[in-house]
Amino acid sequence: DRNLGAVLLVAVVFGLINLPSTSLWAVMGQVLRGWLSSPARLRAFNWTMAALLVGSLALLI
Image (cartoon, rainbow, N blue to C red; front, side, top):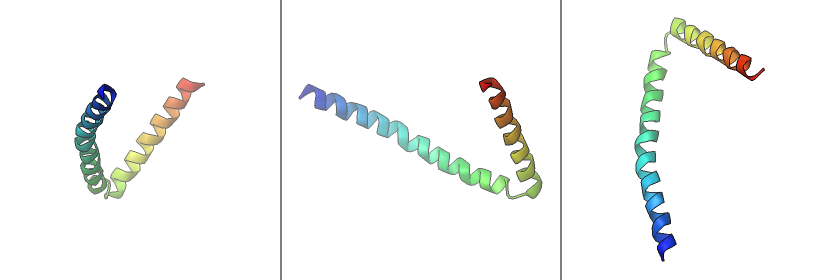
């Protein structure tokens, strides 16, 4: 069936893209965990993320 072949092709392509993407996400999470182990870096990161969150809120209002 032609539709089954198309579905399988899309599933394989998504799988091939998904595996390296999720692996990279996990590795970068481990790197970030090590980098944020310093209290000063963690505080700076939290303040930066808070500022970005407030800044994005300004775009919604």
